[in-house]
Amino acid sequence: MRLATTIFLTDETITPVRLARELEQRGYAGLYLPEHTHIPVARTSPYPAGGDLPREYGRTLDPFVALAQAAAVTERLALGTGITLVAQHDPIVLAKQVATLDHLSGGRLTLGVGFGWNREEAADHGVEWPNRRARVRDHMAVMRALWAGEPTAYEGRFASVAASFAHPKPVRGGAPRILLGGAAGPVLFSDVAGYADGWMPVGGGGLTRSLPALREAWERAGRDPGALQVVPYAVRPDPGKLAHYADLGVEEVVLQLPAAGEAEVLRVLDDGARYL
Image (cartoon, rainbow, N blue to C red; front, top):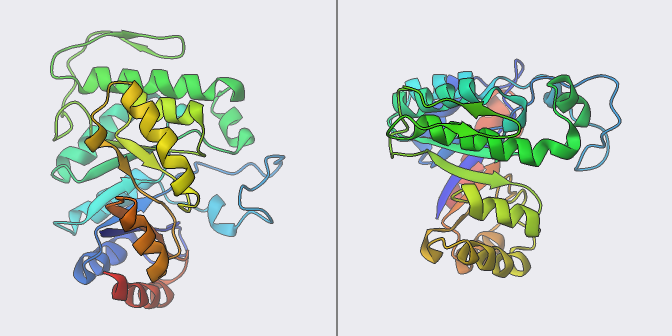
């Protein structure tokens, strides 16, 4: 089982360069970074984990810039977003950013895709909350059109693109690995089967109950049963939990690191190394 990590990198934490080097030296599989462009002060959206919103949410580094730094100082470390708020991006620009980072890193990028929870943040980007899932579907279709081997057009309700020359292309062809985040349910599982390579469930709880429904949606969409990937995200590890994931066929788990300075993060990395 591959053990990757995620962290809210900010202007107050360990740097991307230092963290990436330490992860690769210790044998961790990857680094995934979350995204929030800003957090409006006047907020009615409740923090999904409950309680007060942690300080790091309003200080998060841009994931693509930070991952580019990580890519430049490593050779094997996988890179990912967990997650990219696709509805909040211009999909043509995002397609270029994703393909460029994947190209420059030698195909090490996983694009984690999500719908978001903060209505106020999304509204500032012009996203109407009830339409955000449909917008993500259109944005993903535009990006796939730009990543296609031949100029391809796409016309959608929320985004369109003319057949275009667009390089570089993702290294593996067609698209980088795409994992969709979100809570278990038929709508999410339909989206996973429709335009992703797998599911990135936060915390990884309840997989025994959820996986049969996901596999059913996946196979109903005509996808290869052996190709489905499930990557539990932001996990607090223990031997029993990791063994349970392995029994379910999970091949990668993303461990949560604290949004902290260098000394604390390296201490947690050393402690987690016993699971590698």
